[in-house]
Amino acid sequence: MSGWLVAGIASLVAGFVSALGLGGGGILVLYLTLFLGMEQMQAGGINLIFFLPLAAVSIYIHMKHRLIDYKFALKCAPFGVVGAFLGVWLANALHPVWISKGFAVFVLILGIRELFSKGKKEEDGPDKK
Image (cartoon, rainbow, N blue to C red):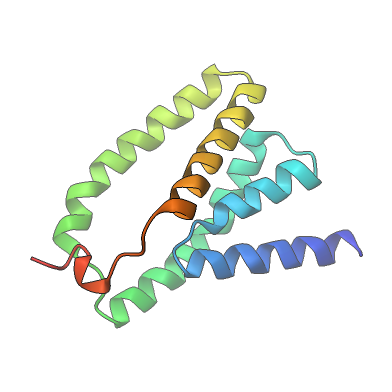
């Protein structure tokens, strides 16, 4: 299979999984690091560029279906921005091998958690008061 075809399939799967809210960027980063041999930081940068148009489409669709709790999102946003700055600082301070290992452990923990977690009913979501 040609490199463009494999990259296209990986991107399609990552976009699809992102639309489901399952973190498709993780799939893209894994593809870029494991199959293309990119450094973790470079793969993360590509993932961010990849994420922008997906986020725009997702926001539009979520707004259209009135699925955004703006008050809650505005409360969370400043912490996300601070977390992003801290993450970039830490990523620049660590050796790329440790970033890759940390990402692998994070994905493994999330996978195990999802594997053994019980499904929640829709009524148990954040809109339930």
